[in-house]
Image 1: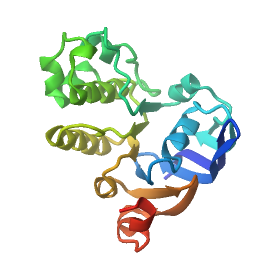
Image 2: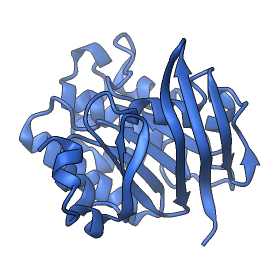
Image 3: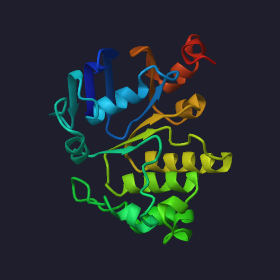
Image 4: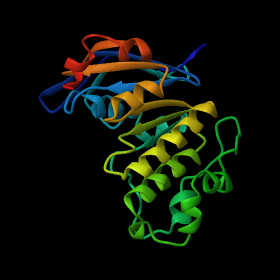
Length: 235
């Protein structure tokens, strides 16, 4: 199966701080990758580098076989990559409907399967809050809006950065249920989440970072049972 995204020998800096040190990562179409590591180990920087948000980067990134290391974030998005950021990014003065439809567009192949109706069916709570402003929503509801908005761009790769952070347990379970549905729909997914057991049980392969380097990678179940995993995660 071809790779949708592939990065080789990826380096990234913030000023004089060298954060990523030669990262390799590959994501096949329809594949889910878990990205693990303690805080400050480079997970968010890796995501931001892949998306074009980190100007100081070096290495090779291809998306759909197209070289993207020098692309800006909007150009990466046009290749079929959607991002659900930590912090959700919901516009507080727009309604639920406005937040959802503002970025909606067909997929690169013309697909429109994740339309507004399907998103509202997937998140019934948003149907109840349809006319509410983003600032009036709970944290869990805002996360649903953020995921739904990303799905309405019909991505081929969805990147989820701490999608369950700070949410109540019932909402967390609901979000993981949606992630399972996304996997079943065939969208490739890159997941960062503090619940490493959930990540490993809901992904095909996993990568563990330590100080900006890959220290462990492979099939998720092999990573889950690796003797060094607890020490890498500090658990």
